[in-house]
Image 1: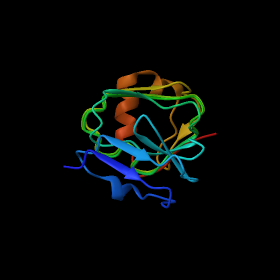
Image 2: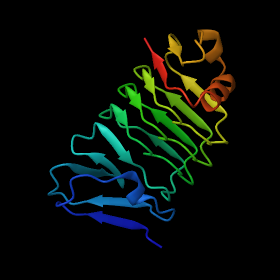
Image 3: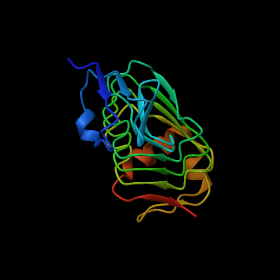
Length: 173
């Protein structure tokens, strides 16, 4: 079992698939790295503006995206085993493909006011998700549906929409 991974200063980028161990609970980055950093075992770019990888086996049940983050990367939380609740801070603008896919315990997400793009399959097959709060409910649409504030007012309905309309990106004006 791999529970911790150390990333040396010679590594400039990490693909999400490289860190897809179910047992991984902590990512450690060399302080000498010029491109990556780790905060409390989570992998970010050096500026901490992109959350790149949350370890699948990290046993925290709640996580609040730091205010420095503007983008949640591809598969960043994909397959997380224990995470139940996520607060996406008001500075996050975009959520990339498969960002929260296959998170079997994820039941509650608050999507901050500045998010204006949720890429395809971002919450794919996160079957426990039953409570989604959009801090800004106005202007959301997909290729198939234009959502009104009424569509997204109920956290249960919002969760159903977010997990059902996954094959088109969600955008907000």
